[in-house]
Structure formats: structure tokens, C-alpha cells
Amino acid sequence: MAAVTVSIINLKGGVGKSTLAMILGEFLVFRYGKRVLLVDMDAQGNLSYCMVPAAHIETQAGQGRTIYHILKLALKGQ
Ligand SMILES: Nc1ncnc2c1ncn2[C@@H]1O[C@H](COP(=O)(O)OP(=O)(O)OP(=O)(O)O)[C@@H](O)[C@H]1O
Ligand SMILES: [Mg+2]
Image (cartoon, rainbow, N blue to C red; front, top):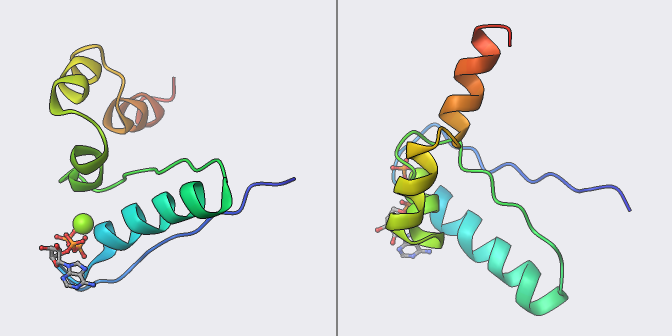
């Protein structure tokens, strides 16, 4: 089955975008047994810090394994 993409977008800040993404993802996993990939494109990284231990994020960032690093490579055309 093809993946379904859900984007949560609102130009206004602090209206619950990250919270909704987290709860919707968890709901789909625990209520429906779906496999969910949450992609945090926000430079604040709030969703990531809610879902993953900070130490793990710091380790991944130190190894260049973040969306920031992927976009940086893409801009260089690599
Ligand atoms: N349904 C809700 N009821 C009450 N408070 C909520 C609800 N959803 C989110 N909040 C609270 O509102 C605040 C902002 O939520 P959140 O960080 O998800 O917003 P955001 O739109 O992602 O913000 P930003 O624009 O800074 O990324 C948080 O303190 C969160 O706990
Ligand atoms: Mg947010």
C-alpha cells in the first residue's frame, strides 16, 4: 500500500502544529497499528525533542545525520 502523506501547516505560530503531529502519529500507531514516520522540518526541532531523547538527537547531529545536513548537501548538488 502506498504511503499517505499528512502535512500540518499554519502560518501562525503556537497554534498546536507540533502537538497535533505528535498526537496524530501516536494515535495512528497505537490505535490502528500503522507505521508512521514523523518528519520534523521545523528548525526549532520541537517535535523531535518531544519524541526522541535529547542525547540521541545530539549524537545524530554530531554525525551529520539531520534534515539540516541533508538539505545542505542537496543545495551543494551532492
Ligand atoms: N489542543 C490543545 N489544547 C491546549 N493546549 C495545546 C493544544 N495543542 C497544543 N497546545 C499547547 O500550545 C502550545 C503550542 O503548541 P505547539 O508547540 O504544538 O504549536 P506550534 O504551532 O507547533 O508552534 P510553533 O509555531 O512555535 O512551531 C504548547 O504549549 C502546547 O502544549
Ligand atoms: Mg511547532
